[in-house]
Length: 237
Image 1 (cartoon, rainbow, N blue to C red):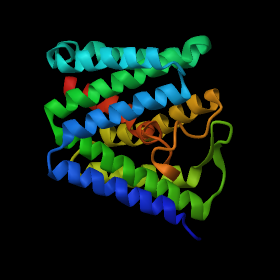
Image 2 (image 1 turned 90 degrees about the vertical axis):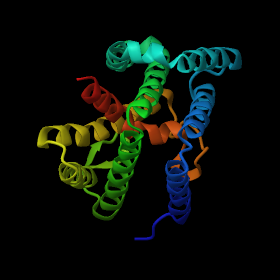
Image 3 (image 1 turned 180 degrees about the horizontal axis):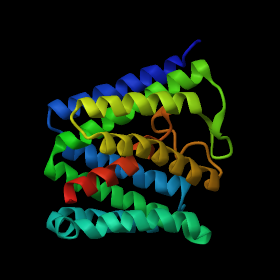
């Protein structure tokens, strides 16, 4: 099989940037750059009104700067994240609003987890990258039945099963329990499916093309979104 060289090249750049960010301690810069890009994608794909998006972004920045607010309301943010997922699915008329609120909550959780242990965030990113890469390689080579053609046209049982197994093994080797490892591994899948579901409702393939063949920042946030909530709960408990 011939792999997409552009996808490999862009993926290599993304990995290089993340490595540089980690070793040079540029977490804050990366966080704010990604946040700006995400709000840009809100504007391109969800709410095509610059004034509203800028207003929401300024409120977001305001509360991030008073960081103690989010620490003191950690459980509230976790509960809201789960609630926004359900509301975006069952309240069709307002799904865009609930999805935006969910993503903002995910960004807040990332910021909070950075403050607790920055290694958690990079672990989540690495696990997500490994999971997605294995699913892509196995699914592309072995193909087989699709899991949900209407929501995610390229996601196969073969790719998902192998990536789930390998991700679980890696987490177990990192001394996470069997149960937690399985929950984290399966949450990667459901995060991906959920974001694909939102994109199908919007009638788009990708949220943007900021990352070329990898889509936009939100397209990379998909699989880690539910994992962020899981790690948030683990640290809260």
